[in-house]
Image: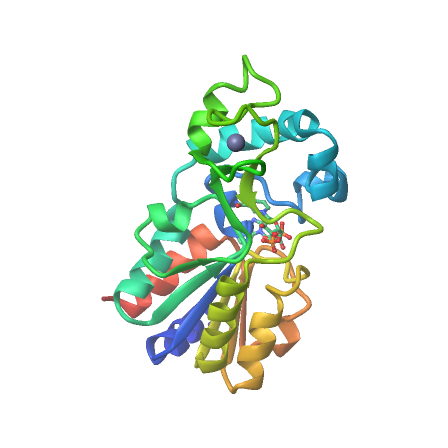
Length: 247
Ligand code: NAD
Ligand code: ZN
């Protein structure tokens, strides 16, 4: 049985690393980008999530971001997030590297979270560098569009997420790559594994001799390289795995 095999591999892990994607937050009500019902069936990603688009018209960016932000800020961790936090607490996982920007891993009690694509919980003014909580900015979007910097009045207030056309935060990438090189088990959850360099992590781990486990609702390009593939919902599969492992 694949869940039992996955549990066995993780039980023996000493330097396990998880890589998560949008799928892990789907059961918290946050839509994924790709996959069934994904956002990119509605929007053109390069348009709405690129730095060029943002700089050309911050209000157009915020009009789309407003709805997504409301959903993400209201979301709570699901059993999948909690199972990953438990696996870290019991020493099986060293860290969670995530492509998500929703902060739900931290909310669920994971301590070592590497945010590869930044955080949607903070907003930064590109003119003066002032930072504000996303919730504060979110609260005034109904009356202020685009939102303005409370310090300098600038209109280029950008969530601290990585938009298309901008390099990934180097410290996070480097830390994740180092952990992937040292990992004995790489657990990928809820990622289509088509976005690089995040998808380099399982490749690096494999090259260093790690066993790869993929938990995803749909097939991924890495399935054939994995020791175990569990096709299913992370909010169901991960608690099963964690329960088999115990404290
Ligand atoms: P993706 O949207 O490309 O892929 C998500 C994958 O999760 C799909 O293969 C889908 O089949 C699978 N999935 C859907 N529901 C699932 C479930 N309940 N359990 C397990 N798997 C499930 O996501 P990605 O690989 O993370 O890459 C997309 C980019 O989207 C990233 O850059 C990320 O920053 C961004 N993003 C983040 C959030 C978030 O913060 N929650 C949400 C959407 C997109
Ligand atoms: Zn400012």
